[in-house]
Image (cartoon, rainbow, N blue to C red; front, side, top):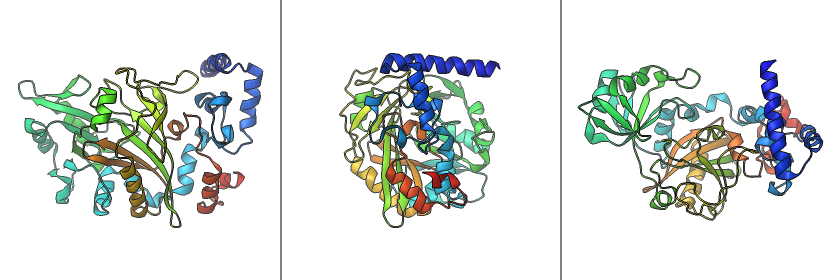
Length: 385
């Protein structure tokens, strides 16, 4: 009962804000929520408010009928990506080995912790034990580094390491904190979050690449700001981008994860053809707002063009051919001084953040693609689209 009461209070808060923003009465909002059920995307109350579906002048395309509800987020990927083809999207070490062999512009690895007796030379220094991992971390000449588990999600276990202080045995972090080497080494073979982190798959250390100069000037912050670009991939047409967003890390965050807006990072819509930024938000509706300027530097966000956008699109095409059986591909790119580098490929992508700028992903084209490339008997919901 307590949980139900809290949920009702949340809905009433959203509804009150939505009425102020759109002028729609509570009854009108309820009628529109109920109408969503007939549109195929299985949107509900949360989706209606999160995506601003009550704001008629904010929506593009076919409006609310193009939106995919959170209940179908996982089902979308399961329908298009058979489980036997998605390991590279879950294990970053596997992805690196396959993607580098295919000539994709992947971020190189400086060292890899893995219990395997033998690893390829291009994974950098092979660290077989936690003692070797600790010795590696105590070399001041190696910094800065970006450290991340090979198998994890949402940034759990990752860290931007700026340097090592021999006098205190502490690693300094980008967010201003520090951690002792023995404490950090624990995450090499102990899970930091049992829901997402599988330490037996290894741990990766990469050079801390600097963002492109244009991006650093805009954000005033050294953390990488990644691009998420989603492609529908088929043998007939190759990889076709359908949506792209720019995750803008705001100090003191060392990662750009949006995570439903809880970190305070920004999320900008990207024009697929030009790489130009349009709408930028800092959370979910109805509690977010549109930002024309960066909240720290005051620089104009709207109209900013991401450097190297053409190379991002080229890499997506190459990636589609490298992983042909993954029909939907969620790519993460870092736009660095060396050009765009692929950080990872995702299978179960966060469709929420793709739909915060007034345009849904369940367009007529996406629906047709789903019907062509899905086993309807295994995923009957697709037939109702």
